[in-house]
Image (tube, rainbow, N blue to C red; front, top):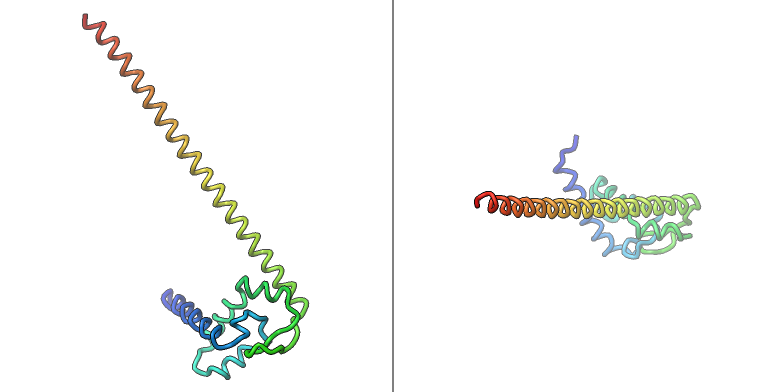
Length: 155
């Protein structure tokens, strides 16, 4: 069982590893579609990294919008040095395109929901101000009437 402190540490380690991979290997730095089995090549090249950290780092990289955009239009996969190492299957291109569409749709829905929430909040605040102003005006009117009648009653 993983604790909540392990997950952020694993994510942080994976992000650090990704920075190193981008600096060391052109395929990562240029965000090229990776060759099938790249994880095995990475483990052979960098035996000091843990499989778990590598898996998380690769997941972050291959699920990034930048990588998915590259996959959606690519025809070739690349090894660590950036050399062609196989073709991108049509189903992989289609999956990348679908994931991007879903991601953009979700982001658009979130923006729209946030916009609606902001508008609702603004209208509620406006209504509160209007109600407060009306109440203040009523109170002032009542005070004027009370003052008027108390002056007449006192004579």
